Length: 255
Image (tube, rainbow, N blue to C red; front, side, top):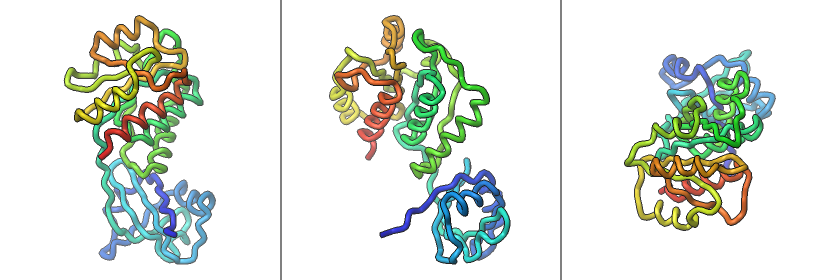
């Protein structure tokens, strides 16, 4: 059985790669990554060539830990094996996300990053008016980075400040596919057929809050070219609908 290759976000990776020696040996200092490998992942120093993926916002590489590669305090030494692609997934998905309570909001962020969403736009709706949690920017990034590590997808979604639905969707253009999910709309199989038969470079997805979108919000979406679909005959919580919606669209469009 092949050993699992762990992925670790490493903020200073790009600088370390510039200093690699002629034998492609790279050393970088990062106390968080060092502690994680030693204490959380429980890597035991045996010089057995444990493989890791390290990435930051510019580079992603796979390497093998060197013998004694963790022996220096807060430093990691590995032999560079190959560079990994950081190409965003196609089609580009732009996700319009309701502002839910903190735990469910963070769950949606993790899901979106895991599915390779390119942009996340927070939307306020009549039924949900929660504020962004305090100190949200760093917290959101940490959650999305963890999702990228797990998914082995190294492009972190860009996140935008919350706006009312009508304002947020102005970023969409006429040539892009625009869809929303709500009970009482078209069957989901119609969307699958559309995604299978047509090629779209950008897909805009609106998932409403657990209480659903209001009639006026649905009318706004339709007036901007959004097509409505229902995911299931039952009513789901918003975070469950997000998993199903993003997962189904990504899986159907993935070659």
